[in-house]
Image (cartoon, rainbow, N blue to C red; front, top):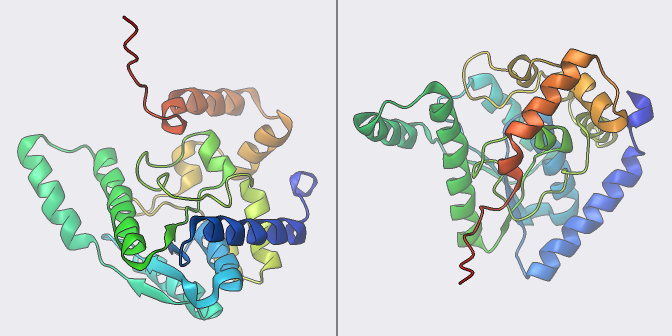
Length: 246
């Protein structure tokens, strides 16, 4: 995968300057982001710590989550000496999904997506109250195939990693000297017990990155990627607007 990876030092320098510029132009006091214990949020956290110091805030937002993910999020925060707070969304989730079930039984996937949307609500609530911007952590590999929750983790004010393949995120994580356990951790959205990105997608990030970077891949993998791309196209677009033309 090395041939698809741009220089991680240059990437880091470029993104950090961009982050500072976007926040300054917005007149914001800093950024707030979800600290999940995964590599993407860890990379955003590391860059934010370097650029904004105590003006960056990581929110750990368990929602019936694996305690190991919370421990990993705390590990990253402590490794970076980063300001962080925890908001347990489990009670809110229980009340909301119970009310929804009373109207119509909520599917497992819809129930999982509620978690991502509750995290978005919490992030924007804290951001608005502290004059910060919400910083997203999605990367290009996830974005291209729609592996994100619409109006959940896709909702943010800035997306610093959206031009990076997953393999590039890993390279930047190593450049930033993040804990090896975070870098090697199986990527997961933490939506249910035992869930991993690659298991759910049906192919590895290396296969996805190779196709996105060079258009190469086994025919069955390419078909899966293109099918996910087509099915999720609406998630990357603004809502259609009815134009009255008479």
